[in-house]
Amino acid sequence: MFVNDDERWAAVQQRSAEADGQFYYAVRTTGVYCRPSCPSRHALRANISFHLTAQDARQAGFRPCLRCKPDLPPLAERHAALVAQMCRLIEEAETEPDLASLAEASGVSRFHFHRIFKAQTGLTPKAYAAGVRQRRMQAQLAQLTDSGKVTDVIYASGFNSSGRFYAQSNGALGMQPSAYRGGGHGETIRFAIAQCSLGAILVASTDKGICAILIGDDPDALARDLQDRFPKAELAGAEADYERVVAAVIGLVEAPEIGLDLPLDVRGTAFQQRVWQVLRSIPAGRTVSYTELAELVGAPNGARAVASACAANAIAIAIPCHRVVRTDGSLSGYRWGVERKQVLLEREGAK
Image (cartoon, rainbow, N blue to C red; front, side):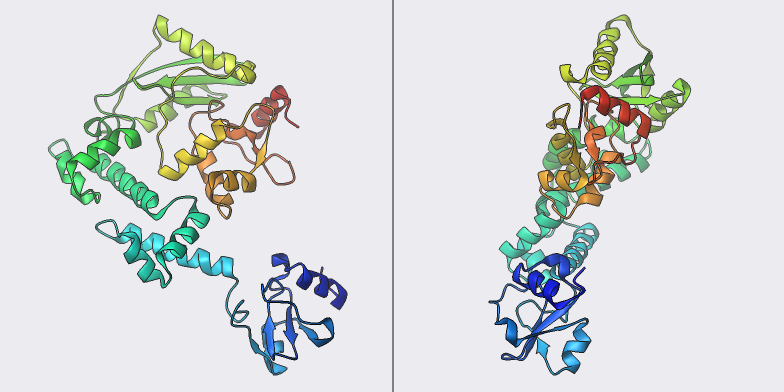
């Protein structure tokens, strides 16, 4: 690709970002060299020469364009590095940095920083900081001893007041902080294991709604998976009234188009919950690529991040991560097995 000057000139005319790094073009009348995607006004073809590397262009006597900065890494890489640096700053700060402080540290305006950060992560800096506090809260509650106090976690997690802590804790944990700190201690989780066309299926619920739908070949392995998630919760075997919930989930497996009219107890980081919410809006019979899903989430450069969120989903089918495929339409990994993913998509009539 871009092996001759005609292809290179066409890429320059189209301002092709795909050509960046493949070659550079220089303008004799201005004495500068640029990336193919440079937004500057195009010069006449007769005044342009092509160079395979930036060093070649400099050795020919050209200086880097001040607009596209071809002597620096591509803009997308610079933005990614900047956001990664600011994410570390947020994670290491004892209290949440405000937008002005982050923008000053990044060397750009507040508006520009806010736009770059959201484009890279799919979250605003404030939402990302909230996710950091939630993860701290989860980790510190899990380590808290029986004699420890939840109030000790409030300030260590970066919350400025107990009111803000309790306002966000239930949504992030799915249970009271005092229950979460002991791996679900004091929390009752009802569950049942049944058989469906995909194999063994475990359905579990808290008082808020379904918290897990696990699928596999070994019922005992599914029960151990649930126990690992809530090691100190009281796991209650199926009662007669819970059969209705299990039947509804199995009905969803066999006929996805009917949907699931039951509440879910969804727990995860702010970004994971955003991905899962978008997944639930994808109708049966339709698939999206990881890149398309990242765009729907609002993080066009976050394909890997959304893939990680899909892998972390513990509520199979109801949060339909099986509807996410590779860009070419082929099937990628699936937590519950690629074969099950193929069966589900065929059952939904996905193309």
